[in-house]
Length: 390
Ligand code: NAD
Ligand code: MG
Image (cartoon, rainbow, N blue to C red; front, top):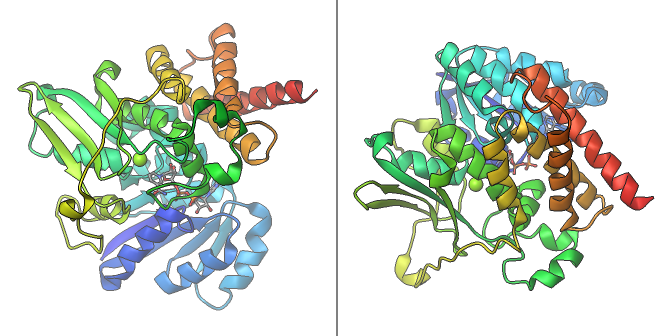
């Protein structure tokens, strides 16, 4: 039996992961599952999966979780340090599907104990790419991509030499507002931004798809995961979300990965890797689809893409600043304190402020420095938002 843990089990990726695991329950021994405020879901899944421990991110929910698990034999735990402890519990395969930089420390703990880390949480590599890769290396742990684009690239590279790769092209659906006039974006509401045309995902990544902050994070994730020069990474808008990514080789050949937009493909590929097994995903019917369209992203509509380029050029802790500022700006957008376009303005302003603050971005990439930088970036977004309101 393979020992598995699922971080962010109550979310969209987590539930899809559980769906796959439950199709073959005798193959898996579930160690830890984690969630947030949805205690009912967390407890129910922990009991169903017979997990050793269930962890809620929120300390003040420990008693609720205990009560929900009473008599089940599943241990209850809560808080950030309990998440790290859960990551340190020996497991063969760990799904990293917490949303945001909160996923970083538990993921590092899993790598430190040598587990294979299936990485849906793109923030991990954006915030601390070098630290994460070095940690994996040091402990003989493996990272497998779960983000659909990165899984697609990973699959297109099977049997290939990175030295033969000329470019990586990741596709973007264009999100909820791809057909809106740019002038209307300033007035976009949270509800409108939370409606993805093709993918069914958590609210935060759905809004990030509308702004392309998601794609911006993914470009950085591509650079870190595949170790490719940022100038060789391209983004193309593809409204059908059927081609997930393409790899161009030095001989001009391009290998594309196609599939229905269902995350169980990428999750299942990482779960069964290096094998391919049957997966319950819809099959492609190209004739019914009729056409696949592609276009360049409009820089005026998606300023986040330009910011990602600046962040990659800057290096150091700029990724941690970028991600944290984005997360906090998104909190303010969801809280209706700022508008849709104010998010990229706030992130740009905080990146500038860090640039002016001597040495902060160039501090060594330790977990402690990443978390401090993350904290400060959020604080500076709050200050900028308060100043606007005042
Ligand atoms: P979601 O919002 O549906 O679920 C997030 C999970 O994280 C939940 O279990 C929640 O309880 C937990 N969580 C939230 N805040 C937390 C905190 N502070 N500490 C600990 N746990 C916390 O999100 P999702 O859509 O499943 O996305 C999860 C991750 O996977 C994100 O990094 C996202 O970018 C990435 N991803 C998602 C998809 C998708 O299809 N949903 C696709 C590609 C990548
Ligand atoms: Mg993706």
